[in-house]
Length: 209
Image (cartoon, rainbow, N blue to C red; front, side, top):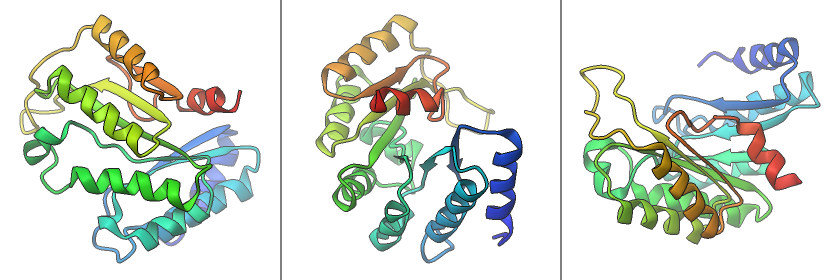
């Protein structure tokens, strides 16, 4: 890891005058804390250099290290995001190194550490899931009090990546949005071009207003 990265990111946010900053990383299972301390340093530098900005952290599952998660939660990001990505039935092919239940546990633990923390998760459609499975994921996320949900279309980056099974119709995304809101999500972004950081500040504004 680059020990100067937090300082450089903080300075970049100041120069760009960012109002809402989404910070993510590759999975760092090579680090004992999964990169938690580095996330915290980055967030502190952003706030020091650009005190008017809000921060959203999009984190990996930290290999189930809940002490590392508490370190992140205690730093009080405005939003903590961890994507479940797809339905559990597809994890073996789509996310073979991840564990669906562990991702849910992360979101649950985060709320236990700080009940006021805004949590967020997202899924991609078009990988072969069905409606029943998607709705079950929504229920699972609400069972751990997840506040924000993003639903987007999977696109195959290259022939070496997992094959796209289906292009989901815009009206289906809209229907999922309505269902998710009815299930109690406080903000839902659902559409073909939606990604986890899509119009991210809107979710925060929705919850604060």
